[in-house]
Amino acid sequence: MKNRNTYSTYQLSYVVCLVSLLLIPVGCTTIPEYPVNSELLGEKVHTNVDSEIARYYLENYLQGIKNNSVFDQQIDLLYKNQGDSQLNREELKQIAVNFSVDFAAIFLADHLWSNKDNRNLQNTFRLFVQGKEDSTYSYSIKYSDYMLLFVPGWDYVENGHITGADFAKPRVLVTDLGIENHLVEIPPNGSVEENANYLSKELIVRGQSGKKIIIVGASSAGPAIHLSLGEQLSKDQLKSVAAWVNVGGIIQGSPLVDYYLQWPQRWLFNIVLWYVGWDKDKLVSMSAKASRKRFSRLSLSNSVLVINYLGLSLSGQLSEYSKTRYLLLAPEGPNDGLTLLADVILPGSMTIIATGSDHFFAEDPLIDVKTVALTKTVISYLQKTVNGY
Image (tube, rainbow, N blue to C red; front, side, top):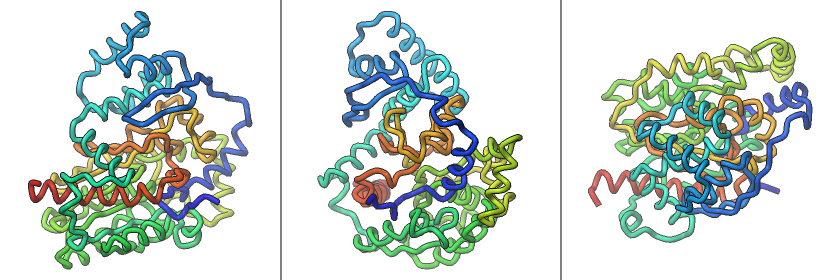
């Protein structure tokens, strides 16, 4: 049995799943399959992609082998026109339309990899996953200087032991490292605004400990953390916050919520919500429409390091929990089965890419190892930055 008491993000998924299964005709939409055997971000990739040009891009172009003049010209022009600017969802959607969804996802990965800071962080993370100690980071790690605050996911009280929304396993793992950590007891089915209020109060209290605080939140916790740090707390109240680890946070909402609010699917969505006893308005606060409006007014302090942990799955690597929802979101571009990839990444942040993972990180057989590696990577980076190692 797979371990799901990890950085799991199933908190909204089973409601979405119920509606998806009833509304989407099974088998009516299939993803084209083009086998690939190559390398991405230094990791082996053996799967299927959705187009011939995506296969060529991964197997040839990115490996420095240019032997298809038609494809080469198209890809060269794309790189020339894109430049170094951060990719947004509109640009990635257009790339997906012009090429394919998998191509756009690979292009995003390569774009993030081209950033030196991201690349160094990714390499350090990989070393920790492999159990290798990177001497430029690890020798000076002082875990006792830090406190981790875990912001749980949707319905974590009732079903957190199943979904992982209660962060039970990650808390055990970081405790074993000697790191003080606490669960922020937000309302189990609260709105973004309610959850942000609880987090802000917790940060004010915990900030008096003298320790550097690292906030960790996944999926639905993401927008609440963003609201707390970006608007509710003053610069002085943020002094104790060293970093925010954004694990697949739906920062700009899930377009799936918007989809299920439309007719005719909203009638079934309402029935499901009534059955499980959830407040529709609180879920609406996590819609793309509401979240993008909120996102546009928020601004984070430069003093808070933000590291995104981004699940980037090609179409042949999707977990069983993501396939139907991935297809629903595919017309909008590369996605993780719950939100668009571009919408997970905050401006000015750094990103570690979880290749082969979608929104449901717990399906990764190495998730416990990666949980520890991610913790070590973030703290070692903070100490290196502060102490100039």
